[in-house]
Image 1 (tube, one colour):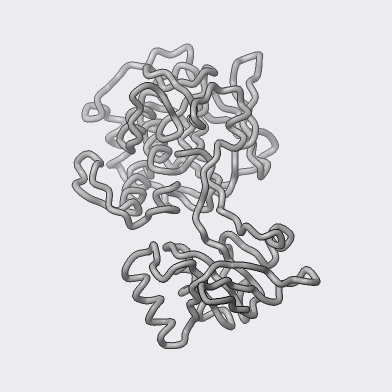
Image 2 (tube, rainbow, N blue to C red; image 1 turned 180 degrees about the vertical axis):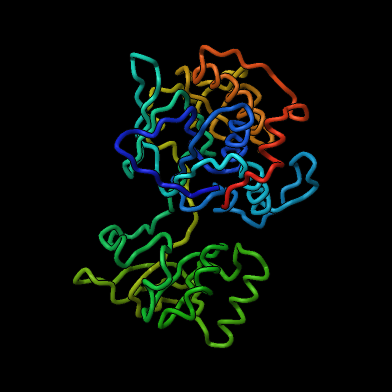
Length: 354
């Protein structure tokens, strides 16, 4: 699978745009390939996997058919392997912002905040609970420092070389980056509001060992102020139970996790209910023909928020999407076991590199 960012002279023409690269979006890309649809995947996050990877990568999952137990990370890896023969282009770090329908042929023009544009027959929303955005620092000084001294993701470790860095958070991402930066930064301080962490036990043990050996610092408390009188971060004040501590700092990396919101989707004229997209249960199509929803973002009577439900919803949605992409064709169902072309595609060594 390729993490692609294609820019041409005009919109990228495809049969389906899949919004969301979580488990449902990845399975949808596989299903699109199976039935002969081209697709592109777009996700606002910087890595494939959606909330599975961002929120609980090492949490065991027990209700995937034929897989007694696997972690969320393992599930994503298996889904990537499954759709690799079709090499669906994936555009990460891009949020879909506009949706417009062409009157002449009813195709959709979809654009992202990074300037990508798609000319597509159908759109499948598989964005979980909506677009995930970082939970930001609730201090008035923070917005003006974003991108220079306040960060919600790490793009390059080298950017923090020789700097004093405060990593705020207690999950896997915060602990992983505190460990990864200790050999690059001048000093790393991990700030968390309580003594227990929401990370893999092995990572917690490594962080505590590193702190005991003087490789990094751990402070229990919450960010109370950012000292940047001239627009340059000088220090961070941390509120603690018994007072406050001031830490010299050049950068703050806040990894508090993600919050979900419908974002631009809320302005696309779709019928919504409790912050999710209402769909029918025949094709999981929204109130606008050609726009589908599957997974947690979809809502209908007796909806079950399960990954396997999302797989089912995506499968049926794409079969209806086929009629928009190829209205002149009648698709004949063939069981995968008897589909010679599919067998050759999957077993014949046509896999693309990740």
